[in-house]
Image (tube, rainbow over all chains, first blue to last red; front, side, top):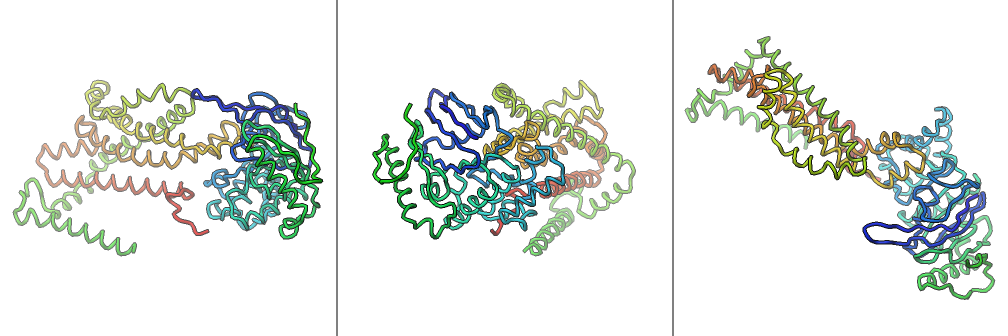
Length: 273
Length: 257
């Protein structure tokens, strides 16, 4: 579905050369929910922008269903961390969700249907006529999610979407995303710096090294498909997985992968190349 | 609170008018040059009954509105174009900074040479003065586009035109509104100045005539009219601004979440 091959991004400007991403190769299968986690400043956002066609990689390529990404692909939606800036304050919630659909040249009946359905699935039917700034942070991010859903993407990119909301709202939104993913079968690439969140949400977690970034490890999350905040987070397996990810991230900060300290963690890291 | 403010405002105005009435009557100022309020009011009533006054008012408003419309249109188009075209901003910045501070009134001789006392003379001065107000604000406004909003729009496949229409324009609109409000006031000043100095038909020319014919109360009455015009224009512009920018922080105030 989503194929990232040898991705490299170097920023050059005013005499400074910053290698944000060195060499990233991974795939995301159709209908999979993959979390990308890495130390802060490791180029997660750069990677996501390259995948979303918002940045042109210096080398390597991104393929969606075999087609090379050269600009924002029509079957992909992005949810940004800064919901307050990503939603347009001059449009009501309904118009915000509808705007991308107008660009798709859908009929107005179809647009209404998609907007109503998307707002309902995030539980914001009543807020359709409000302005985004009249809503709480969590609700605003729900609007952003609804906008992405209404767009009917095959791939949904989420760039630390819950980093700016409080812990309780965050838990609710995590469950919302997992619920929507299971319902709709979208492919989701979820970027986060929160290890617990990555393990709780993902079917697979990609651990990135610190900058210049490579994939440090790919970890399959073998938790049951039914997850809930109360039980999943205290499950022994959850603790093992999160400990493992944590260690890998610490190692990534120091610059070398550690030998596996937790036994029995299945890992499918590709051979180094 | 609002009521109190209105009462205080009315009281202040009443005191001001009363002082205007009392000062010349008590001999504090010469009433030849400073007629009491009541005489000015009488002259104003006479003016309002005169068709020539309304023609002059119409001329002034025509010069003002046409000049403002041209300046706003040109300012918005040029501002957007300069801001979105790479290198154009850097290439034009020094020229703009050189041209902008030139007082419009310094161009009066040029206007007279080119167009005499025609309406076009007034337009030249009005457009020159108000164009920069709009241009500068538009350029600031376009700079203010949020990169996240821009990337959101791009990621949802909005093309250049759609992004201009749905992201750039609403972002710049508060700045444009400020520019237009400033330009509207400046345009009135320049319209009256041009009429007064050049003699193009309008309230300004009528003020000049009143002055040379020693019709001092009439002259004050006309000055009051220009003041009222300025007031109306500012109030009107603010009303439009509030309506168009109901979503903007400066208008919406604090929102309980």
